[in-house]
Length: 154
Length: 254
Image 1 (cartoon, each protein chain N blue to C red):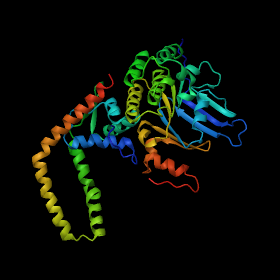
Image 2 (image 1 turned 90 degrees about the horizontal axis):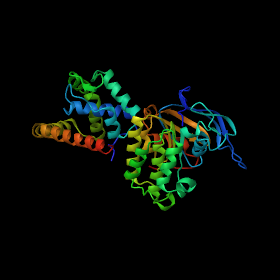
Image 3 (image 1 turned 135 degrees about the vertical axis):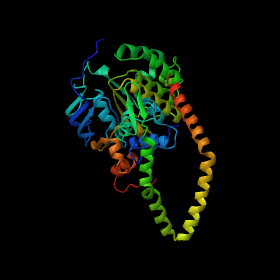
Image 4 (image 1 turned 45 degrees about the horizontal axis):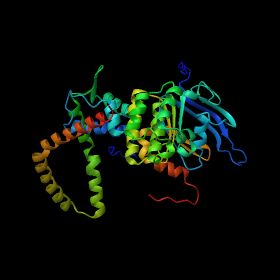
């Protein structure tokens, strides 16, 4: 069915974040065209105004650039831009809630550190072994999905 | 048939202090509606049973005359107006209330659409009926609920009316049919933007369709705003709706 959206948050932001996520994950590379507005409309099943708003915001923030008559393309600086932003937000989004929850549950510092070290090693292993595989697989799946959506309308 | 030029207004719908009282009824079904909907948006209309959704839609479709106030559709009063009528498609919630759909074979309904609707797209109508598996030789009364609903919605879409009103129109469609319907509506809307007013009880499922949302209760509009602006308060439209329209003494658990 339709991709899940969080209906407690503006949908245009979630569409913007989905594209940013694809850029961060390497599914969309610099100077590659992002899906057209109508592809996004049928993929997410949302109002075109909502899609337009999300893509315009990407444009305003310099994450994508416009080629007249062709569509929107990933800015060469976008991955770095997004990584920097995510790094800036990392503490707020992940570390603050982690520390808060650990304190609430009475998990002491040492236990938390041990836990992080264990997961850290896991994450590194996974990233090393599967990262490329994942990227390729996801890209293929998405391309097929969009193709399917497109064919359904012809 | 000539194409009417209604572009003298930016608004598809303008209501000023609109009132509707049914005969022998104490309270007004609509108690002072003020509403302006710009051309080209898909707008959701939410309200509980008896809130006034169908009354409002019937006024906009020219099926009833307001008891007071002014209703303007594409710049004109829709009541008894032969210029506005072909420009407004009203899709009923049930075939039972729609004698035309109920008694005429699907194939002939398509012919009628072609005659009555200036923007009718025969190719789209055929495509939709095929996709929904609607039997062309049967009238609505001989179809499954889902097929009859699909037929009504298909005619509504293929009319490409500048104002299209879906009044709980997909009731009876299963989840797969509803998904097809949303898909087709968005696809055609992209190619031919028009004003679509859509009432529904399935707020959670349908809300992503809408760029604007209206919540109506006891014949009055409680909220009319951009859908994403409403969501910025961190609630789903459905929760907002429940909070606003829950009556005293009623409870609701998720």
